[in-house]
Image (cartoon, rainbow, N blue to C red; front, side, top):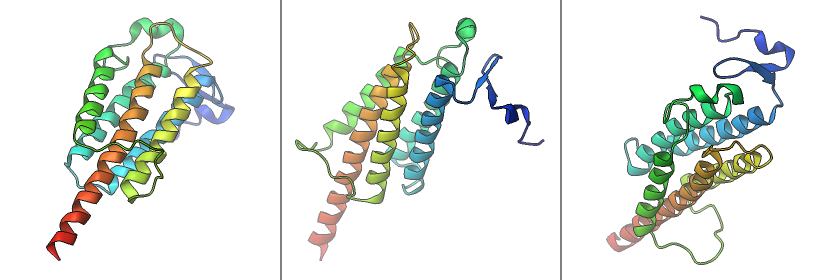
Amino acid sequence: MRIYTRAGDDGTTGLYYGGRVRKDDPAIELNGAVDEAQAVIGLARSAMAKGSELDTLLVAVERDLWVLMAEVATAPDNRRKLVAAKSLVTEDMVVGLERAIDGLAERTKLPTEFVVPGEDAVAATLDVARTVVRRAERLTVPNPVTGSLVATYLNRLSDLLWAAARFQEGDVHRIAKSVEVDR
């Protein structure tokens, strides 16, 4: 199987459930930003312990982003074909992010001032992912889809990534303090 199709050589790309649009279509721009965010989340995960709490959480988020991208890449005439939690963002997906945010916040002393990213590589990478998600969220504004939870999901995801970065920084501080005590 070849990974190239040549179908996009004319500057168009295929949509989920059919149809083609220009590669600079707002939906494709949005999906590009989400794809970028997913890659940056993967970069953060690559520096984490596999199976850790944050790794497990972020794998689930990356899978949710496939659902979100499927919804975005569907022409309005085909939205009726979307399947909840498989190709359509659901309220449960948003609530899941809120629960994860609350769970991390309960165990993290959250800063009361602006954060200067860079406590460690994982937290800084999560902050980069957050900024990419914010860009994706901004790209939903010019072309809102009635009944879609894409913008809401992205808004919560940026909050989750911020909380995850602060949680990671807390882990760094807890580890550093335990090393100092052990000396």
